[in-house]
Length: 220
Image (cartoon, rainbow, N blue to C red):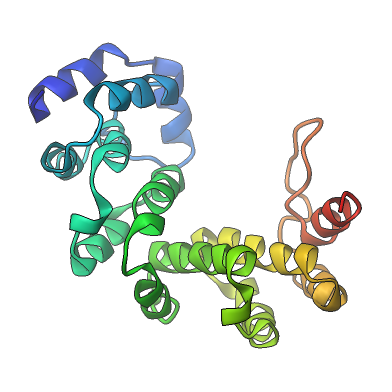
């Protein structure tokens, strides 16, 4: 399949309600509104095709870009190009697919994490804090958690909205997994008050850190 054929296929999967949902939540209008299951099914058919994936990304069509994150080969993307890709995203759903499927699989993700932690661009910071949260859960010995908490306390309240979500996740993970830091993580979450009034569906846990940490810690 080529880029044009994939776009035609994605167009046949258009769902008006899904398109409206994405646009309402911040996506630009260059999208078909294909359901995530349909995009994943197309990716399974294509499997890995880096050239096609990069071509789809360059179209700027969100459905095509979501699909691209599933079929490109992260190791073939130059770090400078990956930074360009992350910066080009305006919708957090797409940003998180790119981060999960490409950035977190990239061989230079640690150097990119350190670089992006010092950037001001909202999506670079969102990605950097997501990578940091991953290190909290998988490689905490490589981090100074006290220093990390200092930074979260200082910066999270005034951080760009896109970055606040992953900073909050990082704070929550520290509080959940490290009892010795739990009291401070709870205090920071209460002090900043981020997501205190966040609407939560029945059966789901609030992202407000004091609620989230206590709920998850009780299950350990």
